Length: 534
Image (cartoon, rainbow, N blue to C red; front, side, top):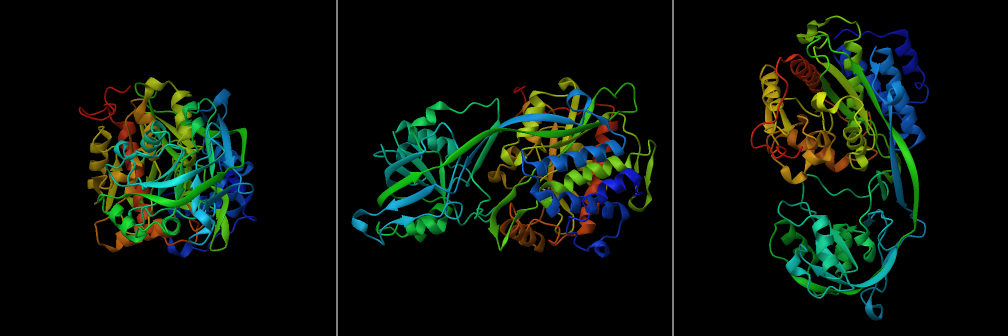
């Protein structure tokens, strides 16, 4: 692809060059456009950007950089008041490590006396202003914590096996079941056999960020907030109960029946909370469509700008740079804007792509607060800066891991809209098989920014690099989740398949072009789970 690098863009990139730590990978990249994309990725995920955590000055710097690149590419502002920014008001509740403790009091000092559970290493807790901040309750294990297992739990802390497997009660269902039975709190134990997406320990921090308009459920005030325990800590917890912890974990991992039993001791919880109002902007820009009959319609292309910032150190590193999650795909939005900047047709001869000015308008969205619960995209669909009825489609870029050759793409919401057929046709021409999600228990459809668009009945789609079971591609994918997902190791030094990244970029460009230029607007298919939910 030709690079339309204006002086403005070069100065913007150079502004942080002295502060970033760029890995010298240019020799691995065989395409000039991909190289430009990667240099933008390096900048957005550099140490200078400090992980782009929602509501921080570092996130604001990243947002201003994206807005400046949008402007330099000739995109028009699509935020509040003629700017590139849409302010998203939020409320933060943080559990402070200092003053927070989780201690198991053993009866008579037995089984090793007090057991202190390390916060963020062995025990996690959801930050909540409406829940209890301290309490002590006897411990009981109640399997998967369905309604029928909640006998004899009044005033106690109920320990439950993990929630990841399909068909198990969700975290909300467990809290509801326990509340109805008068329990003091619920602790969910990680499933160590859920290899699809291994449990994340340690955690960056315990912090809840919500939209300021969201209201907490006051019914939770009589309980401790939901807690989560590592499998290793569970083994310590059940010592002296007469139960084999490994056997319980293995049975749970196989969804076999689990015993109900008493756990010797009481859990004493004390939480130190701090709260504040914060805000963080979405960065929004538009490329007007070229066809007078279609230009009033918008194809949204989005990625999330936020990451995790500083947090619990892993292997001595406490900065969560978020290179593939999701700096690389905000960078791809910027690259697409640059490649369309000339105002005419961009000839990408080396890749067999010709990008003309789209007939429909393209809405470029860098969302905030995705890692905190899709906050930026949720705010946008509730407060759209373009007519909501003219949002023709959303194509979201997240969960993409170019770690191996691109032969398969998993598509979320593949069978819900006509976008699935369009993506399949584009993929067919490139030797890419488009598949439905074969791991629905991960709930990836609901965990990324396409979901709020689907909820308001806007056709949307997103993609994940796919693989066949037992292949080297699967090994690399699983290893990435075990080692780098939501960790400092998601940085620019990680292994990459840049040819696969280039191939995806071409697929994305062709898909956007096909959707933007199609004479018929995308639509939902009969039988979609979203039909009738507008």
